Image 1 (cartoon, rainbow, N blue to C red):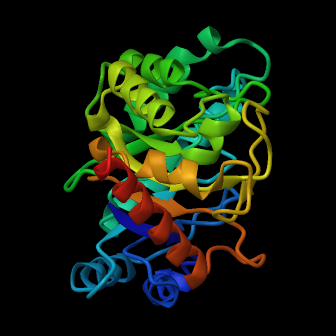
Image 2 (image 1 turned 180 degrees about the horizontal axis):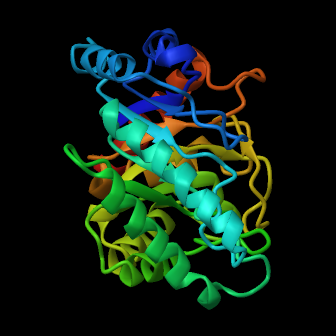
Length: 291
């Protein structure tokens, strides 16, 4: 399992790899534009190709993932917002593809009280349209992220994610990003080997482990089942290092990449946070090996 972190990309992605080096990451995640704005960043083809070449020859960073803009809402019934979301997602995906990203993580959005079934076809159709429009050349999958369960957010369970993928014709260009804090907040426990194994088995049964492309490794500021999205540094939250170790050390998910999205000292993951995740992962592997 590669261990990495979300990092600041800087202008033209110029700082992303160096920031990854600074925190000791094997992999990085970046935004392709402002996460809270609609305007795409005007990258030239040369800028994107240079980053792709730098990544391919980098000594330690082996994968990059991108995270789509938070404003995107494919679950909305507002036609204007839906159209704007499709355009923004397409811009994000094109950039992710051009820099050689292994996936674009997406929060599918919120149905805003209209119910999950009301938005399944909208989300699935939107993903297919964007994938078809963007995927000339090397493929970059859209990775649907599970949510903590607040409000009308879509993807709060493995079953909801599976319904979206099924409605999209089980498109192989759709995968899943599993967030450990969101999983905990949605009510899925993994405090010991039995619970962690049950969680991984449930994912495999409902979605298939082949869909798991990356993991957001985060502790939680809120209790199990609280339904709120509140990340904490590793070992400083209600999940704790032991539980994270049981989940992330599970033998069936070792081909994945874990990416920290923790606050650090206020500016995101630090070298010590990545090191803490490596220790948790190593201890988890040892615990599974000892069983």
